[in-house]
Length: 266
Length: 358
Image (cartoon, rainbow over all chains, first blue to last red; front, side, top):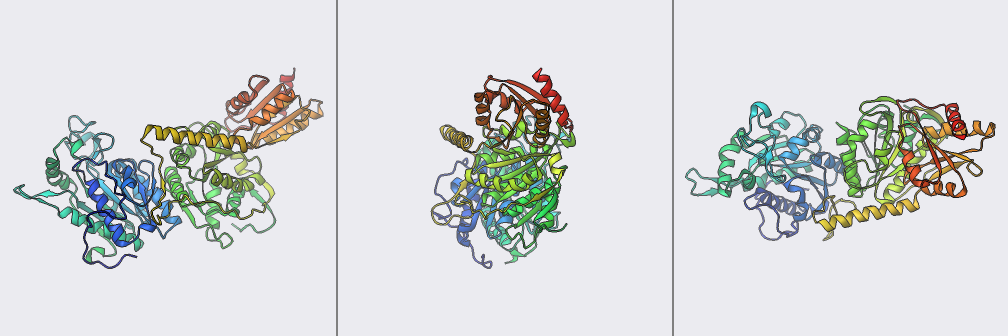
């Protein structure tokens, strides 16, 4: 089981919870960061032998290539349902998924909401970069107003496509979820843009571990990572960090929306 | 609802199927209500927690057919004996999940209580999901095993057969029945089912040591997917050789053979008796496995000299295609069809045979 809150650090270098295979993620993408945070938490908690990763469809579809755990792949958007089937049958297992915003907030919103509403003791990490990454940069339900994507070449018109959908806020309206949190994961520029701050990774590391602790306590945990997709945003890596901080994090402000078990307080 | 303890029972087909599944050690059921299949989840909900079925760990009503089949996928990945039940419109929605399950070689049992279609159709019996069940159904190339009970006792007995085939071949197994059999009440004795233990060494239940299990349907490397598809094809070829099942009724001296499954086989069997009283040597071939299709038996009948086959089915001609393929143009094939939830009477079948004989 997972111990009490204490000093916590992200391990660098090889880990038994990582396969060691180089990731396919684009340079500057936070998927790689999150993979490391998850591997580090699984290792520290000593749960690899009873962990099942559920791959979702999107950039995280190959997560099992990098995370050295048992894994099963879910159809597009259905990871929360697949996780429910595993967890109901085997409550002793630690079950988690990394989903993208297209997967979880668009095609899979129903599965997400109902798993959350039942309070399934599972953990979902949502990588929200405001766009469909794997399919080549189309509009997602999370795309900010005005953003140019492959299917909104003149910028997203929220009058016809609706405003960005906030999954964390939506889940927070439900009674059952135990832990709902949003973290700005990328490095963030200082006001002068001379330095970049890695606070997001440290906050992310804590949140990943807390999310697993919540599951072990029998609660549904959900952490949304506001992230970047410089390739499909058609920006440089540094520009994308600015955009995430100045635009995406304004649409999706970081915050703790639910913490039933008080894991954030330690 | 009372528990079934007596030796003899009088049950609806759907209820019998639910108890049959419980008696074979069902671990998990994920349901979504749809007429005319709802007695299956209702019966299982009532029996959930009954100490008579200690292996029955999970009953959960999903928010959609899609959610239900994906829960089935998750439970199947742990090596559980897991089942879902639905009817036509829900069976369509489940096809995406069934495609993934076939690709990941997950054992599971899916019951389709076929109602009238297409679209919302009606609540009457049809066999219009034959193609969807037997030819794959979802995207990509795969075949599933499809069983067709034709009585309430078979509704009770087939879950055991379905699970043993599902685990033997690591494949989804469909029990394709219809609104009539689901709602029909008949007298039955539950067969003694010996406890079956299946190999689940492939399940994803946590990696101990360096070895781990990955269940994935994605093979981005082109030759790798080609090899996987070839593996699925050759697996089904083995199933086709080993698992064709059918029942023959008075075919030994028959000049004309009716081919029918499910409720139609019951009606056709009655018609055979009526025809024999009239001096027409009729027989019946009843496919029990619709996939693999019992083409061996059909070919043997043609070989023996049977020249006339009449396929009786509750659709506009689906199984008749498989009969044509199995007989290879060497016999006369007539197709007798009813749709909309209507059934042919045995006398209708007799008239059809007489018309063909003239």
